[in-house]
Image 1: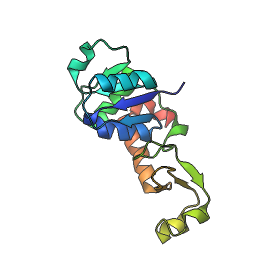
Image 2: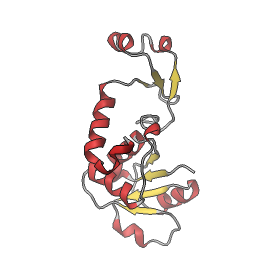
Image 3: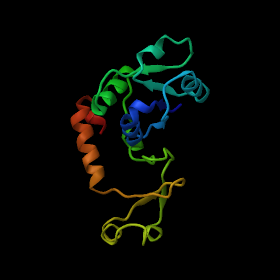
Length: 159
């Protein structure tokens, strides 16, 4: 079973990085409250919050109270707390905005939807079925990989 998360409004950047790693991560713009915990339990998600008092609530859900202030440290904290080793094959497979799985599309479909130089340079394109955003393996992917190598040196072999 895949690991799935739900993050509260204080962890938006962390939610984005979990999506980059390929983890289905809902981002709730509201506070972490009983409804938040109920949704996590109903959907089998691990709840992520910065609210320390929520851990005292009697709700049966896996919960990580994130202590770190910065997203790079939060990501490391969550992965270590849950002893998760991200699968490199799943990286960059979800829409960073919608959390939907990206779908491969023929290069011809991307024509006119991406800048001309991008269309000329890249052969692989993916599209979000919900928001329609187009993704390609550009320099942003290289920067993500560099950041992950620097941030998660213990996982260098799997990157």
